[in-house]
Length: 427
Ligand SMILES: NC(=O)c1ccc[n+]([C@@H]2O[C@H](COP(=O)([O-])OP(=O)(O)OC[C@H]3O[C@@H](n4cnc5c(N)ncnc54)[C@H](O)[C@@H]3O)[C@@H](O)[C@H]2O)c1
Image (cartoon, rainbow, N blue to C red; front, side):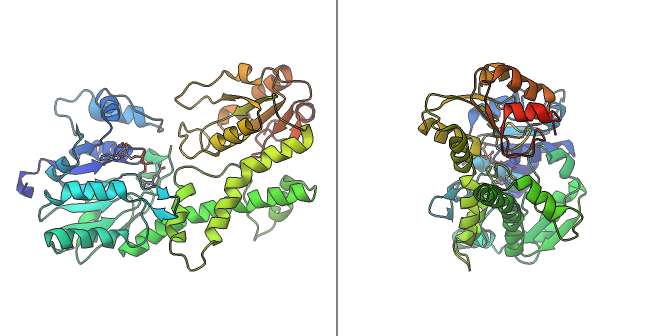
């Protein structure tokens, strides 16, 4: 296909949690957009005007873009090759990591192979997915090797990483600096024309610097939360209170700033560190950070067993399945690991989460007769005094409550429900 036949401004390949809000936002800014995904159910939901996952403001945006227009600005396709009908192609496919500590590029490779035959001079190809350092240059090299394009002159390739947090897409797309690392002379400028529609500051850099900036944005957060998680484990060893130690570190100290403990995972943090670890100058350092965060569920279970004895045949209520507060995203959530480990203790686990798509037990049912309550996700709903009152009313008399988030203001990772009720001040 020649670019003169193009009938859209931009194609977004992969309508996931990054791609769909991006495609809708381009359309909302007046661009004609082709949204591509190989998941027919997902395309069906979008075509019917239903957001397939929670994103703040997403449903209204989808309705604005998809419904009530004579000329829809978003068309949908299952074929990656249809992306060539647009001048700009943005790839928002998943980039997991193999257990070998190596980026899994299979989806990106597959999309590239689908595009190879249909790319033409004038196309731009942007990697919006998070990728290992060197991937953007690899993509450019792949197009040159197989099609002979001069990248940066004929075809334009760049990395423009997504740094928006889930749930904040619409708030941040207009404001977060848009990093663009273009290959060759003009790729950065061409891709900046596309992302310029959002009006956020554009920061031009090299492809590898854009890749490193994105990965290290997430490594910084992953490490930032590993430190209080490790401190929480240290405090248990010394019979100290982690919340009091954190307060001692931070209070009126200009160089403080340690974060609070919690479940630190999710689809990005849990794997992006591996893209650096893959060829690290200090192999194992980030793996150790990951090990700390991944150990939190086991640490909490061991702490509960030290206080309650065996958990076999005892009812445990797990509050929260999502990987972070106020999202329905369960991918790579440590709550699932917690549940698996509890089941290996032969505990009777009942789960409640008000956000996730799958069915969970109602709160009252999950709490009824529970001897252990673990707050796995700090959803806003759980902060309500009503939840603490429901624990006091429904759970077993000597129920142990595990709240690594200090969501209920008890300032104890392990507390008995009676102690929390006496403290009485929800956080
Ligand atoms: N989720 C986030 O909050 C977030 C934030 C910043 C960056 N990222 C990065 O953005 C990228 C995408 O993440 P995501 O969470 O949107 O992933 P996702 O899994 O939600 O979306 C990927 C989409 O691509 C589709 N897909 C897979 N293979 C395909 C193929 N061959 N052809 C067409 N469609 C295909 C899937 O059906 C899915 O809808 C990843 O690199 C991720 O690390 C994610």
